[in-house]
Image (tube, rainbow, N blue to C red; front, side, top):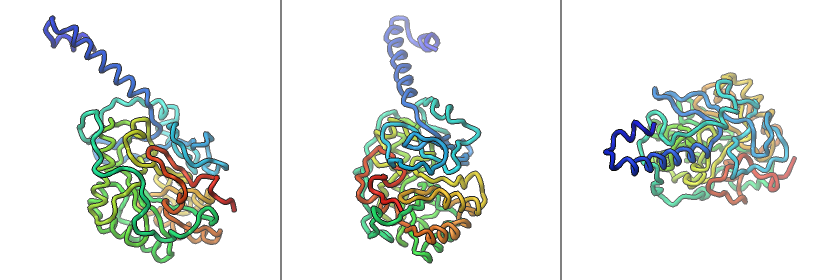
Length: 345
């Protein structure tokens, strides 16, 4: 690769060109070494591929998300949240996920930006909701709390889900995509107006661990702008698509990452009964549940999920209420309420 590049320069400039080329190679090698877990970027056609997630949580245990005694936080490794199904997507085994190389360029359709961070549009960092959310006064160090979270929306069935949540006095946390907020601004506004929490799921679901620093910030800030444009406060919780982060993402994102401990794999198994069984079967106090309000079958499963968990004595809260008393740090990943602050029931 070096010889063709040098042929473009006069002989007297070849030495300087060689230094520049070798320096670029070194930078690319360093970026690849950063690594990230999980995920694939969106395709050029604009459709989002089925999520690919790693199966080991912060406690280093593989398989079921029911592993006891986990701390709920991680800030240094790149392993993703555990799955209720306990497996990664069959199309991309975990060994490949952990060894993915990162070219430093944006994925298909992404912004073309220099590999230097851009200034955030607002001061980064987590801030509790300005207006208390439903059940905000619950003390999750004593109560049997659980947080339902919904990704990728809004979608055509989100309104029906909001009807159910309101009727049952159940708050949830919606991790909204910026491009969907543009399509459904009144639904995003309603999510917040009815006592739920709204977080940031990036602009269009790219794998952040494959992007340069400036593109990571653009994905997050552009989504935040779109969400704020619906008339609600700017979100200060981020859920990275696929749970995929690396050192670059942790350094420049500017917000804490909210992962999950329970994953019914509703994107993979569109069966309301299975979705409900997976969520209820892996529920434990302090856990964060991942689902997608863009799937009709997931919304169909929620009445049973809510009824069965209420019968077991659970109180539904937003992520901010669940994590109350925990100092959420920028660049750290949180999978559940830390065990030290959760009373076992």
